[in-house]
Image 1 (cartoon, helix red, strand yellow):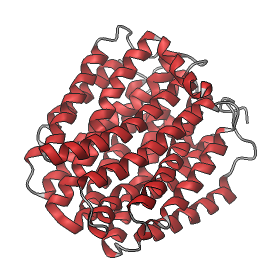
Image 2 (image 1 turned 120 degrees about the vertical axis):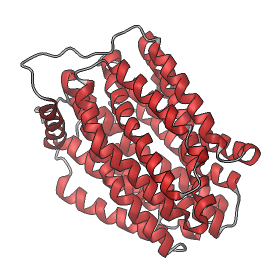
Image 3 (image 1 turned 90 degrees about the horizontal axis):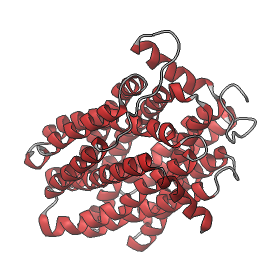
Image 4 (image 1 turned 30 degrees about the vertical axis):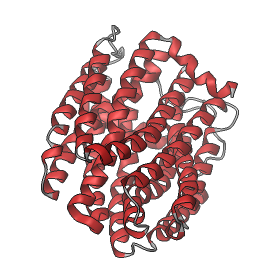
Length: 408
């Protein structure tokens, strides 16, 4: 317990504490968006909601893949405060349009635009954590950030499901916009410039983009983690796309049940994030990543056979596995990449990791619509097959425990 509470020591840094509050507001808004989107898809398309969600989420990650490398390069050049505030305000405007949609194509257009600005906000925020906390405290700060993301994944869907019963699912978009507006205001109150010092000759933005990808792929442990995020993306896409059909279609349950299933998925990820913070430097980060990819794939295999209570247990394990893949990879980048170029590497990582989702979402949507009673079995089998191949070919010979790139 003491180790888990150590992650809160990073809040002694006043700049990080303010940014953490802004992140909390932003993540609360994001949590409401995805429940609202799932309910809107079911309202517009019924049992074909998995296909609508698959397309919408594919457009989401397409925006990430296209724009986040540019965002990372700009984060090493411009004020990160300006980037994050602008992105949040743009998302507020777009969210105000979502309650008005009547056709699925409108959902697709708005989701792509909304996530174009998310592609600028998220990697910029991720790169700012080690900048403001320093080398000693960033593992705990990253763990706290990840745990908060998942905690709001627990609270957000549960609250959103209850609010949807009372207010209607479309009202959640307005609440999300209010949360993102609060986030922008909090970032504006940060006195620090949040701008990295650049050294060396001037280069083009395109050169920065290419350097971010090059550093990401040539580092063995980071490359291994990135590839195992492919495994996690398969399991995660099946959960996000097909859970609403299984809960509301196959099990004939309601919005509140769907909210609680997704909340338990987030609860597992929250506890896993705290475990990463408590065990930092004790276990190799690549150990967390492998184990997480394994358990999240195993958890979704029997999901089509599960009623409500067993599904809660499976989604708890699946959520824990997701976080044990994604969070240590972010910390590996802070460990092994020099501070002056971390923005472009976080941007490249955000793009490449979401490229996996760009393939996983439509596959999950297609199999979820074609095989609604067995799709989770296929998702788990695909994930486990990928895990075996990656482990045999790309597993690093020595686990990384904090060495910089070039030392292994």
